[in-house]
Image 1 (spheres, rainbow, N blue to C red):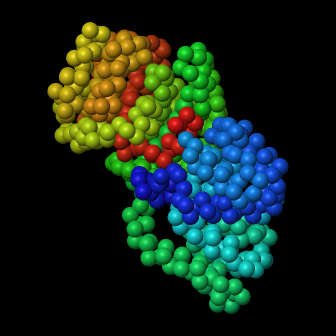
Image 2 (image 1 turned 180 degrees about the vertical axis):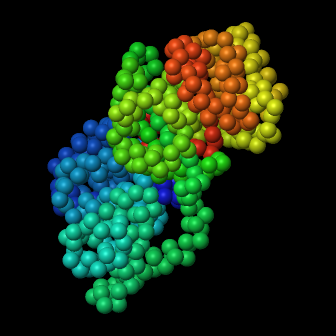
Length: 507
């Protein structure tokens, strides 16, 4: 298990276990029409229409036997660059083809536990679902009402006609830790009722619940920070869908919301944008914020944390100079950068698992834990940006092992190719976590002058100080230095490798 995941549990690898695959196959084969070859053809065709499963109909060998055909589908799904995206495409296709099949809620619960680790991580949810599906006869909906009441307000909206699978599906839809609490409250009441006619058949369920109780101590380690001790990290990710040479190329927009301790540390995933959006490059400023405005879970989180928010744009190299802070949301159409710190990040570094973390973490530690300086801005390094000096930049960086912030004397996207490669090397190989530049190619000394007005005590204050500059510059001309600062801010604790196979463009 690695990193930190939704609901405060560790994010695991995005491919599923053998036990999970077996359960997925069992649930799929329980769909009434799955035995028909024509139905499986229709299923593959509908899946192919989604980005993550594009072309899968041509990859899955046609096998007359349903069991072998479904196993072939799962094998191909697991070998895809975005296996979890393929599972989501599978659920979407079956929701259209068999919306009333009793197997659909079971499938949704299993897939949600794999893709979002809700209401419980897959390693716990898989044996639970298998034990619950094995109950025979299946409990009738009306008999579940006393146990639904014991689950608390999370299930209060259920009407009493829901099947066992539909009750589980409802817990998976609840936000934050409410789903976990509702599920465990329901299951403890259900499995421990000695008057329940199915009580003697609940041994496997009680065993799973008992194992969870034993491991509650380890769960506590990963609990979410309290509301008063965290900041909200909103990561907005743009993935190129077209080749770089396409003039007005398309980008898929995804977003994920995290909590992070106020003083830094590992993130906890709490929500994601329900549906990705595809936009042309020319539409990013005008339309990119629309999906964010319609993201209700995000709106609730933003109101709760007030000013403790940082917005991170994960951008490909071709977009690092994009004025992301000018995105606006809501009816008032206010720029994000006037209300919250907005930084950019290198998407290439974020998703490349082969880039070493050691130098990055070491330089980040210098940034986070450096002593209070008389002038923190003196800690920014401003090397020459001449193309002929590109070969010397690496040596310059190596000679400064404590350097955490690199200042560019030219906009990143306007650097000569050799110098741009040298800057990339400084970020990716030497681990420099922070880069700052002026987008309009004006004098970089004016950046320092604008930042100094807000007297930062530490380099770690840069996101907030740049934010203050943008607020002060909102009534100035567009060419004012305060309206042209890009801050690349690579916090190594704010990396969710579990994102990578959930987004378009992954290999």
